[in-house]
Amino acid sequence: MAVENDIGNATPTRYWHLLEDGRVQCDLCPRYCKLHEGQRGLCFVRANQNNAVVLTTYGRSSGYCVDPIEKKPLNHFLPGTPVLSFGTAGCNLACKFCQNWDISKSREMDTLADEARPETIAKAALDLGCRSVAYTYNDPVIFHEYAIDVARACRDKGIKNVAVTAGYVCAEPRAEFYQYMDAANVDLKAFTEAFYYKLTGAHLQPVLDTLKYIKHETDVWLEITTLLIPGKNDSDKELHALTQWILTELGPDVPLHFSAFHPDWKMLDIPATPIDTLFRARELAINNGLHYVYTGNVYDKTGQSTYCHQCGQVLIGRDWYELSEWNLDAAGACTQCGTTCAGVFEPQAGTWGSRRLPIRLRDYV
Image (tube, rainbow, N blue to C red; front, side, top):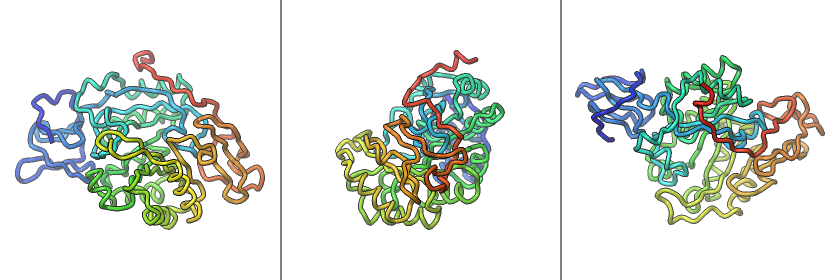
């Protein structure tokens, strides 16, 4: 935890309390950072100013881009539609394999190049024809107050809200946050406490608690991503335990994405995930009873398409982020056998395709 004399751009927060020794404890996530005056938490964006925890990145972003919703990845939430994506800086995990480290590990506030009020983001999403806004690139948990204000502004304009998160958050702020979300993709980074502790500096159980909370106590559409790292979390034993837990605790209809690791950040010595590992993981998960299992970060039309779990028909064909087939009726059921496909669907597929459109929010003020 760093000490900063000039915190700047400080927004009040409410998930914290004073300690007897004069420090302030942040109660947003299970790290419970205990901060002296002027000190920042591990996330870097929450700090102790005048014996209160403040957020230092409200209204500031590392960039805005219109993406296909499938890139989040969300395959069962408004397929084919554009989503306005943005993040800030910092992160409350310390993943040695971080693939957005230039944003999430940034200690330079000038990384935050674009400023926008919540209402401006909502207006931009509407003007651009986006069906949703995604809080992504780094974890929205750490810019909790800003994300919620943006989500409120988006809801006022009929825009949905999507969280892309590691799920590392305490119960009370979690409940407030997910009141305003419509969909979430949660990184379940592994299924052992040893992995979480050694490679992310965090713990497994709070993430499992978040997954169960989203599934059973909210109406938020939930999908899960697990990045498979060779020799770290890709054994049959661990994949069996992970998929059995999802089946038992969340149910067979929660989509699971297995994505390929590429050497990055502090794990440049680990090779990229072989595509056969993704094939093996997907087959194991399907054999264990999960209905919708995908591969990511590789080219695999089979592993990226959606199938009817009853009759096997392709429901949504995908070629990277392009939709190639659409065999769902207006109610979201298989056109061949009538089995409902779990998800949030519109009568017609979106047509955004694979485009990636960086934008400047100043153009939408």
